[in-house]
Length: 151
Image 1 (cartoon, rainbow, N blue to C red):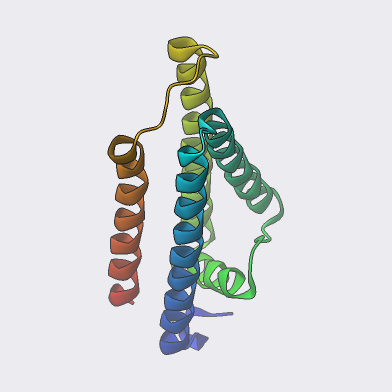
Image 2: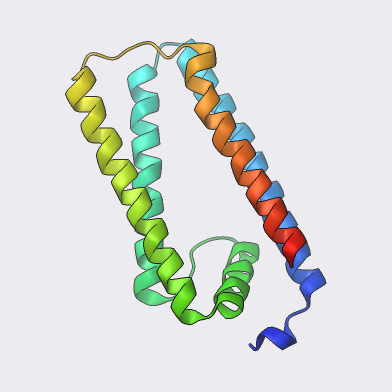
C-alpha cells in the first residue's frame, strides 16, 4: 500500500492502541516481577528477563528473514505502515540494528551476570531494581508519543 493511501488518523489511533497495550503489559509485568521479588524468586526473575530478551531477538530475526510480523493485528498494521513510511531499506536497517542491540544486551547481561555474580544470587531490592524498568517504560512512552505526534 502506498503511503498516500494510509489514513493518518487511523495510523495514529492504531499506534495509541498499541501504546495502551504495551502499558497494560508493562504494568502486569512489573506487578509479576514485584510479586516474585517479594517472595524471594530473584534468580527466576533474572531468568525471565533473559528469556524475554531472547524472545525479542527471535521475533526480530523472524521478521527480518520472512518480512512478516508476529503480534496482534494492531502491531502488524503499524509495522506495515512503518515499513511503507520509512521505506523497505531504512526499515530493514532499523530492524537489523534493533536485533543486534537486543542480542548484545542478552549476551552481555548474561555474561556479566555469570562472571560477576556466578550462580550466587543477590536479593533484588525495591528502588534499585525497579528504577531501570520504570525508566525504560517512561522512555518508551515518551518516544512513542513523540513519534505519534510527528505523524
